[in-house]
Image (cartoon, rainbow, N blue to C red; front, side, top):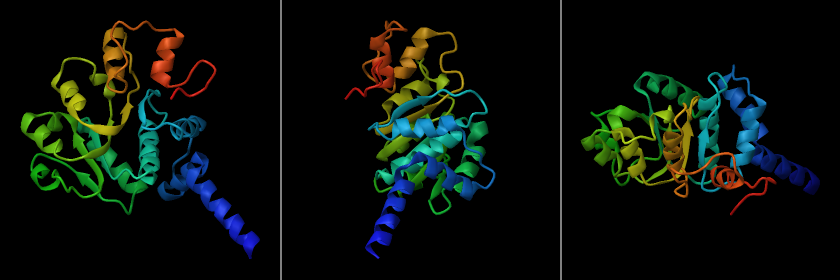
Length: 231
């Protein structure tokens, strides 16, 4: 009996902490989800980083949305309760659909200007909130959104940040522990804008930063050249 209990406990801890098991359990929920190896590697990397502040720059079709959703799953296990997803208006329904597939027992809120006053308050319900970033950035709406203590924010199409735009100023004004940025084209040939984008995730980044040196990669990856994590 003791041996069986130990085996069951080991299996439980493995399924809880191993990203591979997490991905395949998500596959069972979603049905037609085919996980990639790079998604497992990402979750392994993020499992030893706290807080999670990451720019996922995979190409189109490699599952950035799924990676963000799986990261949300891990953060919820760590105790995060309120998530804000800032997405392009055209992608909002897609995000809501995917989140409802992966989190059937979690409250998923579709925010719009008509209901911000209801949901965005000090004691906002736990769950995942999705809103168009262009709706969120407007002055009245942004003030309401900032009333909530967000544990994590997710920004899709994050390459639209990094300038002096209203979007950028709004995202920068949000106080949160975890940040997950997604973009298939994070650099776009503008090094200064790219560095300003990274500064959202790491205040130590400077616009005068030079690429392709160990100092830059330590700051942006939190790992040294030898692969040891920098505390």
